[in-house]
Image (cartoon, rainbow, N blue to C red; front, side, top):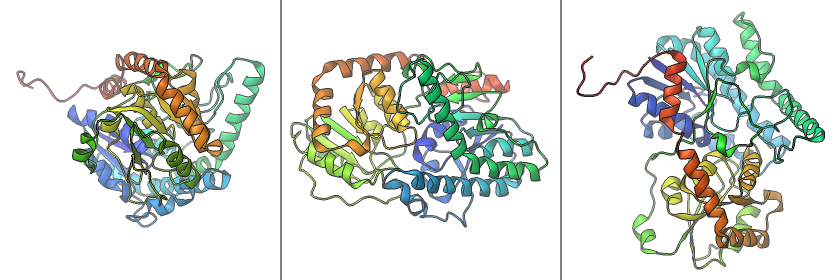
Length: 431
């Protein structure tokens, strides 16, 4: 069986989707990820098949320029710019992939929930598709009990909270209208039924989530075919890092990362450097998140801080006592996995919602990026470092999650949904 994967072209989605792909490959299946050229090194380093799309619109080494406005902050114009990039990629997929799906013999599509064109491609090819929720689920619930995946507020169950949640979901649907309109235009050309909402583009067979139920709110009930399997914390591609000199320093580690997209906000880094220079009893690694090689220029860097363009994050978190993060799902779940409490500086997208859950579970503190300054950061860092309850809560949550999560659980669910079995067998058996 040959699986095709449709994913956004960013590490926060490619890594969890790639972990599922690797598990399927280990079981004897074929997997190909279709994406823009800049993602090829990351995908192939994970040992996954790759085929480029949109090579004229997004040639090699253009990712950081295409996403440039999104890197320096958050507002409606920046959001719309990012949406336009995703729509351009989706349009290229709808034009190029029908032929490739046929030529490559794709049997099933694994579609990230933020890529509605994947459902359309599966319908056109008349093959099944499964939904991968590499961030918090974005499906809209009619009861209004849950805020959307970008919300910074908690569900309270009050009528006012329900009105707020419904209004926010409607705003999100309105913002995504151009994307869905483009997909529906192609569906009509293929003489297929159009989608009424993004909910219609999620698989009725199986939806896999990387956010474990234990980390979400108690109100976050999902349909029976939604299975939380994550997080998928495994060793990734090798990243250059000065391990020899780093390991000679016996001080405890504070790890800092503002992710790979909204990671060039100068005032945030200024506050970080000023606050962290006072923590000389700790060694600090600050990753600029320049996975395509583009990074921000920083002013004078304190001696206790090592700045790197791109870091071996899982290995560093395994040693860290604190993580200062943008609260992207991948980093948050890796912190939970390693029992590392957090100070969150959410910017936008799903980061405020993830940071809200970090505080809800008492495994860290949050400061919205527009309110960040050195004094607030210093207080939050000291609180999380000195109050052992943050670390203890995080380790308890980690133990709960690790009992029932991982890529193998995701692959088991895929095989059950498709009624297939792995092709690999023990060496002592014969086929």
